[in-house]
Image 1: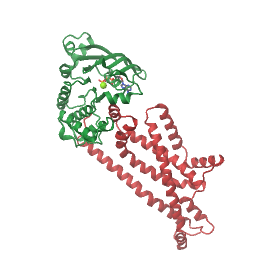
Image 2 (image 1 turned 30 degrees about the horizontal axis):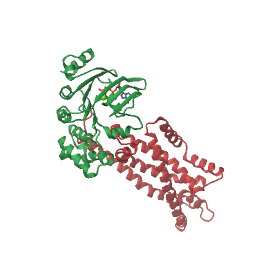
Image 3 (image 1 turned 120 degrees about the vertical axis):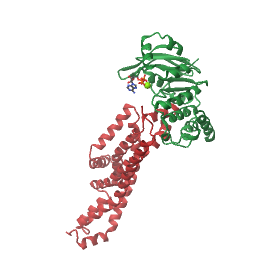
Length: 238
Length: 242
Ligand SMILES: Nc1ncnc2c1ncn2[C@@H]1O[C@H](COP(=O)(O)OP(=O)(O)OP(=O)(O)O)[C@@H](O)[C@H]1O
Ligand SMILES: [Mg+2]
């Protein structure tokens, strides 16, 4: 077993740096495809949630609450074994993408719902009173106004999803954390526990920190701009 | 033929019976003013005319065609416009874009035609120089005049107004009323919910008084100001005409 400051341990990591890069690549690939799925689900369920139709709202609510109130690890195991037992296992990567996409989709749906609900009711009414149908109303009037409310928290959701690729570990994935784990427990490579996890964490940090910093700066500047707009000549409410 | 017809319209919000068997006809070019105390159902009545509220029962006819959930988008697009108490201009678009959006996206006008139309109506409301600014930089009165210009750009036969001056500073109310008085000279069918009795007196062909979800009395402005029948009306007018 090598200590944190053992040069041998760090050297081993350098030699096997390809493993970490491969893990990173797998993590990013999984995250990217899962993101597309999450976006699609988020848009669909976010729109259902704001449709004003009871049944559709309920469907969206059930999806969001079930997903947000059970562990993502459990969802992943469930999906993996459910698919495996049904006889057509699509493989770990696809399972991981599906599970992550479905999980993240619930958070996307909430972000999109909140964004749409942030637009005053009067905007929907003005659009309807002009004769815009649902699609036109969303496309020309509602989405352009909600997008700036949606994007910063959506970036945070994406950051979380990148971190959550590590859950693939439970079904034996090839993501960054899984490969790190194999590395430290491997017969030939084993031992460099602390340094390996530091490297793994550093890689996650390097990707996630800029994203979340960007998101929070964006959010702050939006709030400032809103305040300014409010102070300078916002219409008087009755 | 009536341009707008409400036939036995009822509206419930949950258990609350807000419109009780309302029957109302507005003929082409008529200027109808609706008055009445707060919560009497004036807004709901007007909003049933473009299905912003769907009646719980009864029928609404616009220009001879029954308004339904199915055809509302098309009928509203073709025949009605609305001016709201809170203006509801699109804040992410310039004034010009606010005015040309519906004509280009819904009424098959070219950009050039739509802009000509927009400048024409901006001129009518006296704000031609504001075409390129964003709505939030304007005063309430200016925003409402833009909203009226936007409604005009759809060139619909009917314009519905729901308390267009109630959110305005007193000093800007008149500039909006002046625009509406100007409009009233055209053959547009106007339905106006308002507390501005001077305006009602000057432009209304007919005034309708609502209370508790019902039309209590209907007649010319003269009738209302000289010898209203119902005590509710007398009481109401006594309160708002100081
Ligand atoms: N969306 C809604 N949900 C529940 N109740 C509503 C809704 N809209 C209106 N109401 C109720 O219906 C009644 C009539 O409202 P409406 O807005 O038509 O009145 P109004 O005559 O326009 O009043 P005001 O002069 O205050 O604008 C009120 O009691 C109001 O609280
Ligand atoms: Mg009202």
